[in-house]
Image 1 (cartoon, one colour):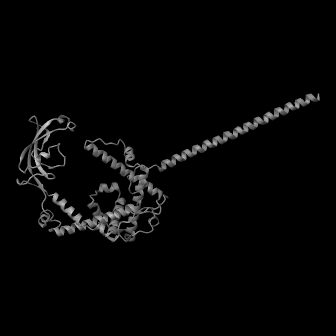
Image 2: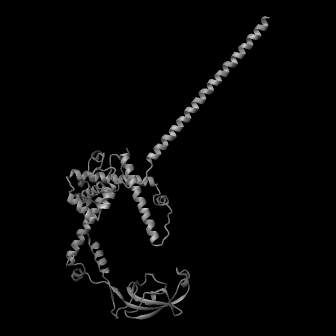
Image 3: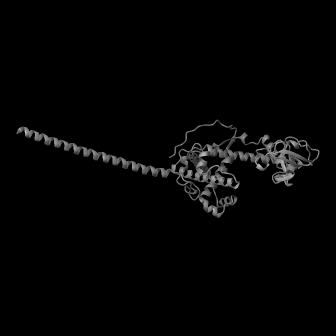
Length: 410
C-alpha cells in the first residue's frame, strides 16, 4: 500500500515538473516574441527616420535666390565675422610683373589688329607662295557639269596655301600663280569624301586668284584710320593696351583669390545645402542650353539625361562637385559682405537704378530674380571693385601651392 502511494506521489511530482517546464517555455517564448517585436519596431523606426533624413538631405534644384537674404541683400542669419574673422584687400598680393604688358603682348595685339584689317592685294607682280593666304573664286565641274557646293558664286573666299583645308593637290597647284590669274585645278575626290556623290570622282575647278591677303603697317595712320575713337597715335594706343591689360589682370587675380583662397572657419549646413540647390539649378540650365544648341545645329547630343552628363563631367561624383562649388559661392558671398561692411561701402537708389539699366534688367526680370538678390549682386560687385583698387601690388612672385585643412560642415 505504501509503495502504491509512493508511486502515485512520484507521478504527481512528474506531472507538476512537466507543467512547470511548459510554463517556463511559454514564458521564454513570450519574452523572445516580445524582444523580436521590439527589434522589428526599432528597425521600422530606424527605417522611417533614415528615410526622413535621406529625404531631408537630398538636394533638389532651386531657383529661389533670395531665401537666405535680407531685403538689402545682406546674408540672413549668417554671422559673417564668425565665419571669416579677418580679411582685407591687402591680403591679396599681386605680382607687378603679372599685370604689366610686355613688348611680346603689345606686338601680338598689333598683329591681331592688323590681321583684322587685311586686304586682298591684286598687284599682278606678286607671286603666291606656301604660307600665303589668298582670296579666290572658283567653279567646280565634273564631266563639264557644275555640282552643288562646288562654287563660290563670285563671293570670294580666303585660303591659306599649305593648310590642307582643300582636297589634296588643290592648294599645291596654286603656288606660283599671281593675282588676276585664271587657272584650272584638276583633283580627284577621295574615296571617303563626306559627300558620297563625289567620292572617287575627277573634277576640275576654274579658279580666279583675286589677290594675296596683306596686312597694313602698324603706324599712326593705321591707328587714326581704324581706332580714332580710342587713340590717334601708336604710342597712345599702346598706353591704352597697357592700361586695359593691367585692369584685366588685376580683375583676374582678385577673382582667382576669391575663388581659391577664401577658407571659412565653418560652413553652416543649411546655407551650404541651399547653395548646392542653386548650383544644381544652374547646372541643369546649362545642360538644357547645351542640348538646345546641339539640336539647333542638327548635331546629336551625346547625353540622354542630365544624370549621364554629370557622370561624364564629374568623375569624382556630382555630390562632391555641388559641395565644392557651394563652398566657393559661400566664401565669395561672405568675403564680399565683410569687405563691403568694414570699408563703409554703400548702394544708393541711383546706384541700383544704374545697375538695372547697365545690365538691361527689366521690371519682369527684377521680380523674377528678386530685388534682394540683385542688391546682393550689386554689393558684391562694389566689394570686388574695392578689392581691385586696393589690392597689394608689388614684387610677389607666384608662391608654391599650399595645402590647407578644410573647415567642417556644421
